Length: 347
Picture 1 (cartoon, rainbow, N blue to C red):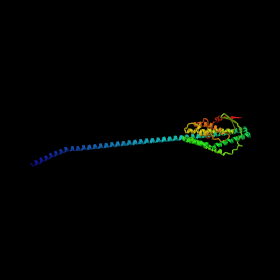
Picture 2: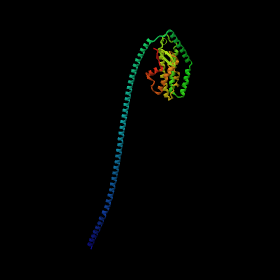
Picture 3: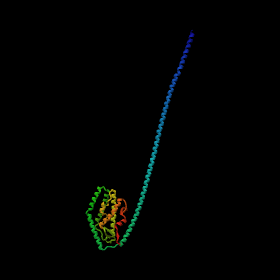
């Protein structure tokens, strides 16, 4: 009985152990499978996160590379632009240097031409002076001398002219007219014309001082007073005779008139003032260059104004229709000078 019980117990234990082992083996794969699935999910999640991080890093790297590339391109473009600007600046500088060089060469050529022209003008003037001296020597040889009575008559006429001229200067009429004229020019804002009148008055004043200081003229050795007339000219319907010294004074009157007229006309043009040569104080005065000798004042004034009118037209019109500019002086054309004076030879 005991052996059967033990055996039964043994069998029962075996059966129970087998069942328990079977149950244990049945439950274990499910847990392991569940643990493995969670691990795979976690691993998969990690792989996804890593892939995402890798993708983000790749995108970040690409973006950084793109920014670096754009920066490099901008720097290259800026460098190219800087090089182009530098090249343009160098070209512009070279062009300016070439332009300055051309200007210097042109100025040098002009200076050389001016020097050559001046040299030719001096040579021509020297030749002209030599010819004039030769002509004067021939003229002097042909000139007749006046009688003693005629010489005394000329001296008396000259002294009378000097007395009248000094009285005119002492009356100070010119000074009053000049002041009124200057005030009028200031009110009209004619700056250039006012400046010209002041210069004219200054030259006229210096001339009058020289005249006042000339009190001891040597009539005996002045060729004007013993030289016979060689020309005849007409003015105001009357004929007058004159020697070559008096003729030179009238030529000077025309040329001085032309020069002062040119300056006056140029001043009115600069002031944008209407042309009116008769309105000028210099035209009304007409005494610049007059020394009181050889010719009467009316004749000098007349021929001064003849030159003045033509000089004014040239100065106002900025041209040289009636005259020329040589060696710093304005003078009327020789052909026109001869026409204005109309000298007729007496021999």
